[in-house]
Image 1 (tube, rainbow, N blue to C red):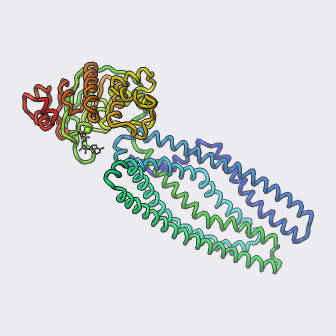
Image 2: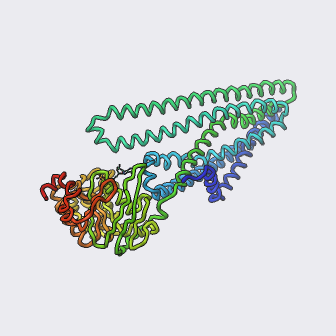
Image 3: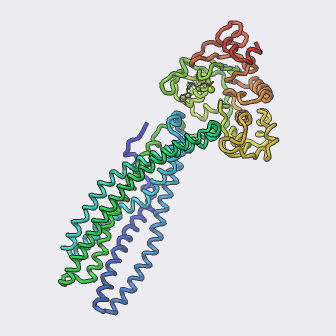
Length: 578
Ligand SMILES: Nc1ncnc2c1ncn2[C@@H]1O[C@H](COP(=O)(O)OP(=O)(O)OP(=O)(O)O)[C@@H](O)[C@H]1O
Ligand SMILES: [Mg+2]
């Protein structure tokens, strides 16, 4: 679900409402800024006229006025800049946290569709642009036209004929800015998208560096990166050309304006229709008109870029979340049965789970077997409501979709197929199962999962830093940490997705014993090819293309010589066991 574009503006305005005092101060500073800008030509006019008229007293007076203008400008600049930086940083901080918090609650299929590099760009590049918009850019956009109008009115008073002549040339620049601005915006949007792609590409490359090394893909990756980088270069040059054209046209018009003003102004001075001081003030005031016309085009471009960024961010924030909040308390729930009623699920187009019906009673140990891609892992994700599916999964007759995530997740602990560790310590990673677990609890979970054996041998044992995604541990070690995490959570149902797949035979044996113990005390659903585990299961579910093709105990299924029997026969381990 996406929100309309106007949400973006409403959200930005809400920041103004939230920071009323700061924005009022900024408004006040805007007026002071304009007054100070006007004081300068006034000072220049008077001091020049005093010098030309050799009026020492007036000269001295304006000398001190100049000093005061200088001091006022310094003080004002400090506070004005500080306030703008403050408001930009406040908006960035708030938006960054809000967006990150929102991302955490989005349904899993959002992450299937959007690359993490792109999401990272929302939190960095886009957030920064919006900060700029709320601070510097918006103030410049308000101040420039205001001061241009005030300056123009003042010019009219100084010399209306000259003002009108110069005033005619000004709007030409605005036209130039408008024409180029639209093109520049298009190119910068394309650039932004390219940058997101390249960041995602770099992320994937470095994550996959072992594969790149072992398959000698360096050249291929380098080529792809270079193509991408070349494309960015092309876009930047396109942008550069537009900017140069715009700059040249603006320079032409602004210099022409000054030449005309100086030329006609000097003629007026000769004709004694204007004082020299008046001409000096006139030229300075002209700056305030010409600059907005030339410089504003650039700021306008930034403004458009920031608006596009805010549309992107608020579109993400408009995505429907799967969670309301994520405070998970470890309350252990008791239950009688979990029932799947006609559960079906499709990822994109292909049906992965097809009319799945099953009842899992408390204390039952179910094993799911099936070929790769038959939908086993997906089924566990559906139990946890990580994806939206058709049909109902009930716990004691209650639809789990009606439960809060907090309640639903308190029933389950999951050991996923691919163990994921966060950078940090071993203890920290195990503790993800139970936030405030004591060290004794962590150690005991590590012992039960048979992780203790390798942790003991590590240089700093439980304080060992596991590296990005746990890279500094072996696959089997990571798996044991993931199991320790699930044990620590101590939920009534444990879901294990191929828990022994990365383990050596010895660790596997120990773990099978651990899992058997778990099976005695808890309700378990285990996806496995390990015959020792399968044999202990109360019920084996044989899955094929998301459908149950048979259920029963090992003995029953073997006796029937059905699909399960054939599945095992194709497995070397199974041949030995049968
Ligand atoms: N995030 C996803 N987006 C789209 N399709 C997916 C996604 N995850 C899995 N699939 C598809 O769904 C099907 C079932 O995948 P699943 O991971 O459930 O299989 P599995 O039985 O666990 O296989 P394996 O034994 O290899 O672990 C596969 O065909 C897979 O391509
Ligand atoms: Mg799987």
